[in-house]
Image (cartoon, rainbow, N blue to C red; front, side, top):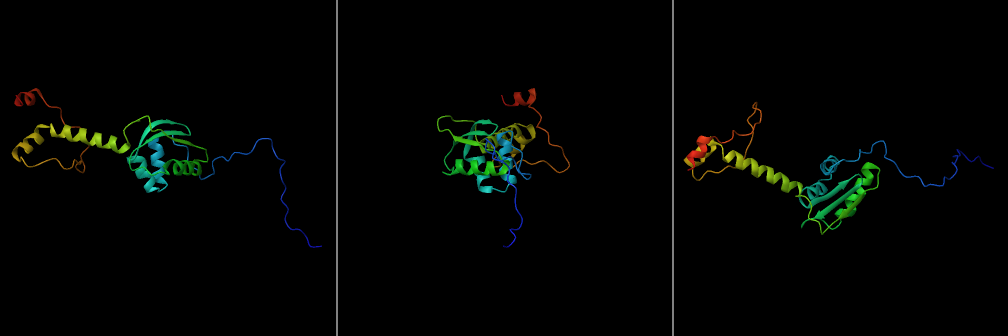
Length: 167
């Protein structure tokens, strides 16, 4: 008779099934929707990242629970894909729910656009910018960028003199 080779010892079966915990390379569970979207980007899931930024609105976020409102352009398998990826990445079971009744917060893209529009309006109220736009009627603000070596700061608020010029 030939030797059997290495033998594994089996532990007695426990009453509770083992739940897989995070693997050593598992990511920490995101604590916010923004962290979740960052995790998707860090994992280089670019299509999923795009959809989470542009095609969903956050309804509710809690540990291992995500409730979203899907916008036009969201893929049909978004819920399943995100659930599977989050479980693989965090080692935890996530519940991802699509809620078509609740509108939710503006999408991340909508929020970024609102901030950019507010900045554009604020810059457009600055006296120097107003003077430049008045001198060049066809000009418009295309892009706002900080100059290298200059700290970003909000534009100066309009003064009382500026308000009187408008009258």
